[in-house]
Figure 1: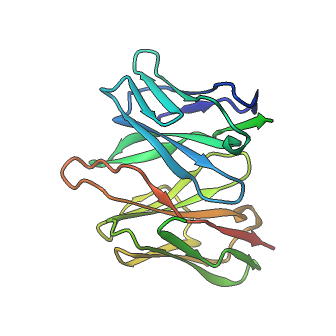
Figure 2: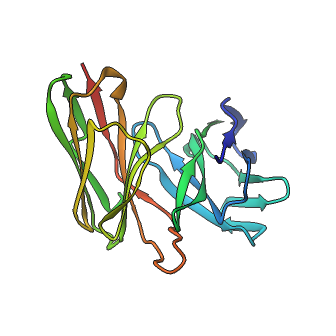
Figure 3: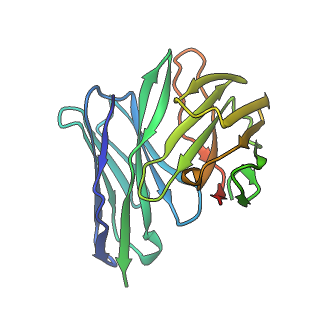
Length: 114
Length: 117
């Protein structure tokens, strides 16, 4: 079965720096990969989606890369702010019975210090 | 605020109780999901409904019973739960492509924090 690995240790960075989070997966390449943000006690919020034939996707201060050779996605937040502090989840579309089901990693906590 | 609502937001129930969680989506999506989120664990997919038909049931114990009366509403009926079932239960919806089978971004509700005593 597909295994998704995200760094379980919190990432602490200073405001203004670039935060880089990693998502590694095993087995087959997913059709697409998504990143979500989750704040404590709330549901995840969709941020970005990148397809298997795309190398990079950007949205404002966010950038996602997708390397199917390394089986890895990197999620970057440039000019980070304390408000970016949250848990970031990676999700892969896994084929299942003719459709694709998102499978989530456990997430990495980001803490941006002022 | 998302277009997915869940009630109740908090629920405390005994092991012999029967309760139901409700989810409603106002986004016109055709797929709805139930997830369980326990502390320090990834989101666990429980059930998926595409076009009102259940298409996924990830070996969930029978004490959890889903119901999807239409494409906008989803219920999770609970009975004789165990303390280890205490968790955040999240509902989500998405718009599936019926040809490719791909579903894209999911929109989550705020969750129901369930405590089983």
